[in-house]
Length: 513
Image 1: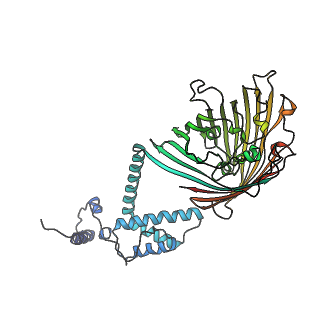
Image 2: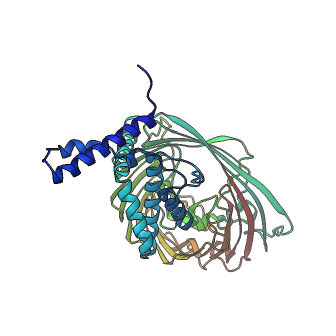
């Protein structure tokens, strides 16, 4: 059978439509002829079959709209080209969506002449737009089906590298006559490589390797109050720092299993997250989080449930000797945490925390007495801790935060079961987008953990009060590079006003990939 070109077919249809139109007009004045309107409507008009040429009013109108609203993707050039009607409808549909978004965001009324042009284009290409929308909806349904039914396990490698230049100054080391060496600077690093895997798309297995040679400054200052938030002097020996698995049970509930490196603070959310990251948050251990949440680490399990967008309940348990067959999962040292987190408004967040620990209440940030209030004579110390934290976003750039913590420790194996009360508090201020978008300045003023009452004896109470004063600036240079200079001062170290102030400054450079 000979091949007939498409243009001849359109010409034949055009001639047929003319003939039918003539018959219809003749019927109006002469003998009536019955015409099936339904079948006639199924015959496409020439305009519905013709391409959209560069000099057509439709393409020129779309070109004008694109110049005014930039509503067609950059990879599409309208230029001097001929489009079929469905390609033109695709571009027209994208332009309509873009213009609608502009109107919705600005609440401005569209000009009458533009509205008329859009209505004319929609009328002219109504059939193509309708078919285009049907095909787009069908494609979205197929993609959604594939996403829910198909998943390929994968492994991602992520890394975070810290280089830090640190210096300190002050008087004598606590408890000695040795002067702090203020002329020395320390260059250290911390490297973390994480292998993150997912098997269902709703879970995550993380194995993290770490090497660190950032010194713990308590060794040279004589107090844990001076420790940095990213220290861990292990001579850069690479070790498995964390092994964890998270899986969702429905949309509202998540379970976390920690095989290595679990901590109570990791099981619950933070309402002041700008301060909590060791790579991009506070430069000090004290400034990162409420010290009461640092009681315990090791193997752990946690569960987090969102009752709604503004209410979360998180529970967690960690044990230090879970792999020891002589002690097991529930032997001390251990700790359990429960936290209720509330977001009553978009600008306000609150959390209330309870922790129970056994032989595990050393917070790593307070005075020596706060980690040993019973003079090494007790082997069975149970502690009940209570904490509260708040954050209030005053405006898009300013967030004010605060926290308090109380630890009530009892020595069950000593006569009269003595108890000690340890308190801590802090106020935080964050200024967002200072100097560069994504950058922020942070300020912390607070009291490291202090023994305020001890029935074991007055000699085991802290007599004075230390203050932690900190300021840092997180400069986000690129998505993968940030520099954080910061400084903090400890007044009356170890809550003793006979000790000289300690000044610590650092410049933390963080690379992420």
